[in-house]
Length: 600
Image (tube, rainbow, N blue to C red; front, top):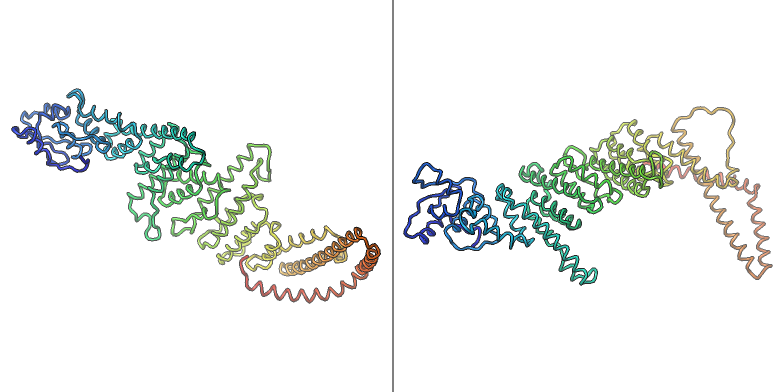
């Protein structure tokens, strides 16, 4: 007999078939549905109906109404058939309704032997609780029978049975590895946690209790995590925010999804951090933001992500904002993720006496991870910089949060700031200066410094500072070979120099930098020539033709004489005229380049 194939008027044919000579003497109403029955078969097996009839002041009671019947007319129909002795099978599909209605009607052994409670209890113990699949089916049937199914202990027993059978199956599967070689396809096909998929049919409250029971029963962590991930994928359907606002989806949908997100995150908090994939954590974080989950849920996800920030990709951090008037991306969440990472680094540094130690830290840190996060955040800043709604304070907070040792070079930071300046032309001069001061000019590469020195979006003070440090770097390179630059040093008088404007200082620094670059180019050419001379000398010393070698040395000595001081001074005069003409050409070309003002 199918559990849902019922007819509310079945009792009249039953009564005629069993008591054909006795008319029905009582009408029982269940959910406003009348059942014309007989008192005798009901009172012999149902303690509740016996008490209601015996306690009634009407000796000829002909109507009785039952309220809050578990399972409604479906369950009562099955119990009435049992009272009349009608044959039907107890199955995992109907045992839940039968067991609950039996307790509701008090169909115990006190009123009749092998009554309905004992019959369903036997079926549960011998058939249902020995099978994970049947226990799960019965537990699903309990969802519409609360609170009675909970009060009689049926829900708890099903949950414990599911956990016990899952643990037993994994133990058997572990022993099966002895029969097959490691990595066998046949083994992987035969022994898999099939229940991982089936648990997703449970409501979230039952699912939470099942997972908790599985942990106590010793089910493997990877199986539990796979189950949680599958439950999230099947239960949380992404909302189409492009077509409608999340609040227009209906309170029932959002409340249900919010409860699922909060419960699953709570279950994940009990697992090891590294055991949960980062992609799943980011997916749950996006969903938590979208359904407006409680703040503790978001904090838990952000903390777990922050502790693994060095393994995160840039695309993961681009979390859309749910506020239409706010930034395009949720920068607050990423900010908290970064704070969690830095807190972990600080704790690791204070807990060990060996390792990398840097200014501003109390101990060693994982420098490689910090550098990786520094590059990641520079890329993130470049992505969010074009957002017209991104406030300057929020943008600067990200930059200031990272320690100095998180960046070896500031090229990425310069690029992000340049993009922000281009996307926010309304910034005042003081705001631009305040933002650009966050760039460490000494950490810019030669290419970045060259671009910055010609970038019209940067304040003049910053450009002068960049040129100044570039000049120091070029002079430092020349100091490694001072004899080659001694004749280029221009003597200065002892008279105090007059104050110069920033723009004059800017032009002077650019001119000196060009001269330094030319001198370095000449140095490199001479070094290359000397290296070739040395190589020829080595080959000649190993060769057999000594006369030819001595002749080559003589020619080499003559050539070296031409590079003497007097020749150098003559050559310098000629080169000076060439340099002057070249500088003017370069100035015109750089002026045209500055007009284009492209982002570096």
